[in-house]
Image 1 (tube, rainbow, N blue to C red):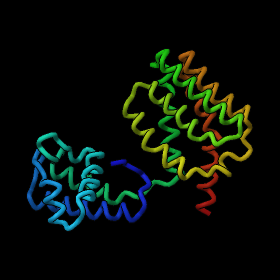
Image 2 (cartoon, one colour):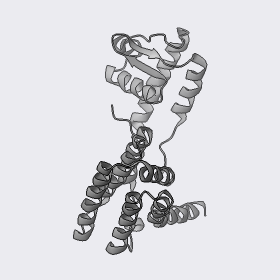
Image 3 (cartoon, one colour):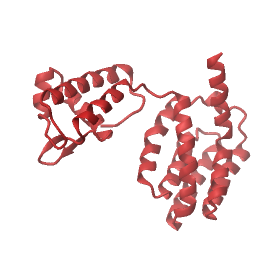
Image 4 (cartoon, helix red, strand yellow):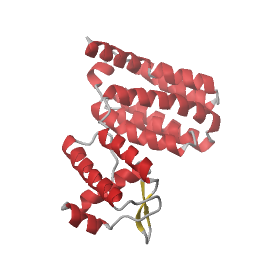
Length: 238
């Protein structure tokens, strides 16, 4: 199952209903950490929903570390009942993050990953970042849509950080940003040469393993986007 931060409302509502039923079942059986849940088939019959809906709800709870699927053993409760109930309430109440929230998270994350990349990158990492940079530059020079190439450039940097959790977070938050990206307003007035230079500055700072310069270069790169969401926030509060 693909975990998404911006599932459509109907799918999110259905998932939440199934999660609530799983929660009720776990509480009724008074399960504790390490106890096994009923099979997907049994829960499907009990809740009168399709098995794939049960599976999606379980995968979502697995994503948050509440449940765990064990080979040959089925699905078990990964934390205590008290923690489980508290976290399920929070998961169900979660709303899809806004474009502004996604961007704020991405900027904070990338300012950290680029410093780690400058510190930890290997020659192979540097080559991957350079390849992604060249692909981005080619698309930009041709006037083609370059957002996906830009994504791969930033993912290459995240991989160079040698922090799998940060790479996972990048993979989670970046696609919904691309889907909701306000290209006409955010990219308005961008100049090819200046955009290329910003990316080259990031690459060069990583190549020279200058952590502070890498962070500054990334911050400069995100300056316009940061100002855009600040302006958008002001307009929405008027």
